[in-house]
Structure formats: C-alpha cells, structure tokens
Length: 494
RNA sequence: GGGUCGCUAGCUCAACUGGUAGAGCAGCGGACUCUUAAUCCGCUGGUUCGGGGUUCGAGUCCCCGGCGACUCACCA
Image (cartoon, rainbow, N blue to C red; front, top):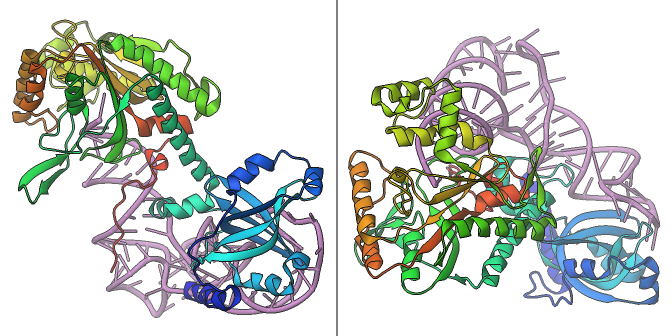
C-alpha cells in the first residue's frame, strides 16, 4: 500500500521536469518569508489589498489542497509561519492549473503572486506562478489528528514539527527562552565561553561519566559531567564574569526528568557571593517570564507559577528535621547509627545514600519536602559532606543553595571554595568515599587545585538546568518533549 | 533492572467469550470559483511489531524477543 502511494508520487515527480523545466531546482529567490508576510500585512483591511497590489515571492511546504473546480485553496507553512494560497484557473492559465495535479501534500513549492484577503478575511496569496522545489515522496500523517504516536514523534521529529504545530511552538518557545537568557547575561557584561567536553578527569559534579578514548594520544577521556572546574580556572585567569550554555553528559538513568545529555548554563562572578546569585536568579527568571509571557506569572499544569521576587527561602536541615518531628521521630534520634538505620527502613529511603546522619537528612528532604515545592523556592543550609566545592559556613554546612520549581531541582549555586588546602582535603575525603564504593564521588583533581594555588578571587557560581527550565516555561511534564532529539534505543533493523 | 499498559491500512482509531480484519482522513477517477476537518458520487488500500506454540480456526489465548509510555528502583 505504502509502495503504491510512493509510486504515484514518484511518477508525478518524474513529470516535473517536462512541465516545469527542473526536477530539483537549486534555489528559489524569495522576496519575503511566510512569517514576515503575515506579520507585515495580516492587520491590513481587505480594501487595502484592493487599492494596493503587493507582489510577493515566497516558498513553503504544501500542507493542504482544497479544490473547488476552477479554484483551489491551499496552505503552505514554514517554521514560524503559515499562509493560505489561492490557485485560480483564470490567473494561472488552464495549463498550469491542470498541472496542480502533479503536486502532493507535503511537497515544497515556491509561489509568486499578490496579496489579498478572502471573504472570511484570511490573508492569502493569489498565485500567478508556482514552481515545485522538492518532492515529498512519503505521505504525511493526517492533518486533523496529527501524529499521535509518541515514539514516532521522537524518532522522526521532523514529522512532528511539520504536523503538530503545538510541538513546533514549544521548541520555538524554548529557543526564545535561551535567547532571553543570553540577552540577560550579555546585558550584565558576562562573557560567553566554551570549555572542554572531553576531559581527562570528569569533575564538578557528583555523577557517573561516559568514558571514551583518544587514539592518537592513546589516553582515556571522559565526556564532561559539568564545566565547573574549567570555568573557575577562567576566573583565576581574570575572566571575572563568565557563562557557558552547553551540554553535560551523565551515564545514568533515563526518565521524564533526566536525559543522558542535557543542557546546562553555568555562570561565575568574581567578588560575589551566593546571596548575590539568588537575587540575580530571581531577576533572570522574572526577565525570561516577561520576555516569553509578558508576565511574571505563568501557567504550569494545574498551577500558576509566580516569578515575583523574592522567592521563598527555606533551610534544608530545618525542613528535614521538622518532617521527622512531625512523624514522631525524636530530635537527634537519627544521629545514632542503629536508630538511623531503623528510620531509613521505616521511611523506605535508600540505604546507600542515607548512610550518615547528614546524608539521611538530605534524603528525608529530597523525599518528603522537595517534591512539594511548586513555587520557586531557594533551599539553603546544605551539609558540608555533600558539597565538596562549596565554601564552608560552619563545621557542618556550606554556603550553597538550590532552586526548586514544580518539585524539580532547577538550579544549584554556591559561594565557591577558594582555599586550595581545604579543597585538597575535600578531594581526599571524596576519594575515600569513592574507594568505599560511591561511584559518584568526585575524583581528586590536582590540576584544578594548582589553579587555586594561584588564587581564585571570592566567587559565586551557579548552574541552571536549561531543559528543566524549558519544561517550566513551556508547561511540559516530560523532558523529552523539550529536547528535539531525546535519546532512544535504536530500532532493530533486520 | 522490576511492575503495568501499548504496538492493527500512509495517519487516527474500531474489531464481543477465539469465527470472513472495518471506518474516517490521505490516495486514485469524476462534479464544483471563497474554501479552511470543504462538500457530493465512485474506487483502491493489510506480513495485525517479530518469532514460535495451542486450536478445525488466532488481531484476540500461551511462550520468547523488540521498541515505547507510565511507574518503582537508581539517578541531579
């Protein structure tokens, strides 16, 4: 069946050359894109086009044809635009009107004509001449129901983009969001930099890396899990305000909030602290929100998220303790190993992760508090134990924050640890964790410590998960729907 | 990795406890100069995800495999 449909389309395509001179033209000179025609002229009244003859030459993909005898209505589309075109026998001439039968829905065509508004007031192009530019050999999915098969939408994203306009709009929105972020950073005189993705030591975060090999140098390398340590080297080098928006790779599970490669923005500013960055984050999100929605309030699922500053601030250890007290656990009970283990079992927490009193409290927070943080909320008061790159606040906690929105961790920032001796000790204790079996513990990075030896100014640093932020700003509950090409298992071909 | 669900025409979906695989859209032929899910008349279209089994008979039941969604575990 499909072969028949393709065969019909192929035979029409064969006839293009004799009818239009070319089977696959090299280029088509357009005077305006579809979206610029629409934005420039759609507000003009019908009469305007009767008094002014506006000729345009544009091109796009044919997505519908409604033939009514000697008049045919069609729509052509491009990424951000769609316009109706009219093929009229009187204007085109009998010959070229008949040749419309060589076109199929999905073909890409160039049209030359003048603008008008139809009886219903729709801006349209009355086509004087047209030229087929590229053949769509395979029938497109049906226009009304669109392409519903989620798997096919991911595997053949181009079809999803052609057919499902809400999907296309979602990606455009993500692109606008990233543009807004760049604008925000550039307005503040940050320099955008690029740092290595291939790294001999994958540092800067707690995660399992992908490993690879360089043949000529005969060395093993890792795909980066974070740009952090390189960006701070740049701050040592005098680049006082830097940011990078790029991919990180983590060799971990896949679910609706995790893709093995994901986009992160990290930024660092010398002579600043985490308090400055919490404030800056509030301003940034409010700016993005206004750029995209024209408002500081946006819809998300059944909620409204407000980016009005100040965001709520809560203390991780306090919140975790409150939860425990509410559940009838006695203050400090978790500090005894045996009792803590009982609590871990009682609350069904991960034994691996909740292996010390502090890590236990983090687990309690992650399990019982974090998922309920719908409105933007800064969490502070992280334990030293789980923060090997942050400046100390006291013996147990560090100067670190995370931002939660819609139950998701969106950002992580801190006042950077710039004491090289302390940093070396922290790496040593990470190495101990690693030897005890923690696959995500950080590796000792002496080259980074060497940079610190030369003096890192007091610096604030932060990372923002761009994909998750895009989920928030596009009202989407799966990360795959904001990734153009999410990772999927290849289909077996036999 | 565990559990649940899904995979039928190019697309969207039907098909009772196992009994001739069907509709709409798309396509093909025809009518039609303001349609927009155009309409009207006629026609075509299937390796039911793959492999095996049970049965007189399997889209349907059983087993193995593939891919996906959700979920748990793991994980920023």
